[in-house]
Image 1 (cartoon, helix red, strand yellow):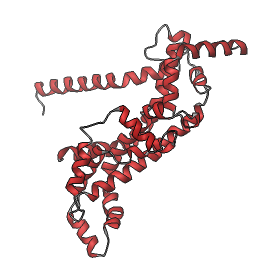
Image 2 (cartoon, helix red, strand yellow):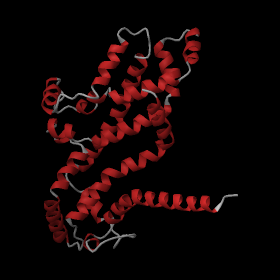
Image 3 (cartoon, helix red, strand yellow):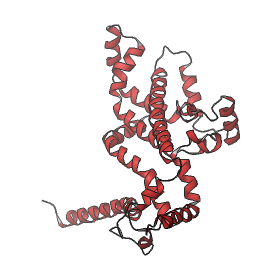
Image 4 (cartoon, rainbow, N blue to C red):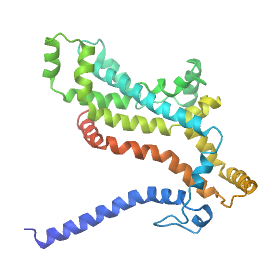
Length: 292
């Protein structure tokens, strides 16, 4: 039976945990209820419930030019980029664990060095341009095919697996590629899920490559489009309210409602994906942190 001090400790502990959870969750909840509140009434403030429920903010956002195409490009970039990153980084990580690979330690060290040194924006721009990646969809996925941090995590995880698994597969006549695809990769789901979260969020949020190297409207990503709208919210508000006035609509949007709704639009996909990978995420991340 717990004594009084233990009971009080539990009360304080749970109270602090609940408060901390609310502090983390409420900003997202606030963005949600603000984005579905009437723009004019929301200026007076929202707290727990929407102030005049409406979806007019989202209607205006998705009515903006090139929105659907940019959304498709962002989704395609995120999915294909994440798959390529996982495939290439995991294979390289597996390769550098094999003694049969010549200069494997040197290769691994060169990969790790890139985590600490960066050439900078101008050399990066020149390199991408010389490789023919300007106004090219491959710009979004090829430069991140191998990411040093993910290679380290994969390598650490693979080294935790029992060597007997590979030895038994070799006895059955399997080569390195077959061992990787049929034994190592299926057993690496925790670290794959972890890296999938990192890679997909990174791909979804990245906009600077689009900003510097893509001028073709057909290749514009959602993040850059929304960034431009975010910085020019006042112009969008004036234009949209004028359109509503011409159509005889009563609703008027505000710069704050535009900014909040844009923030929600780019946040929703991440919030939808993360819960499905959460159960693998913590395990994979902890394994990668135990041994370097």
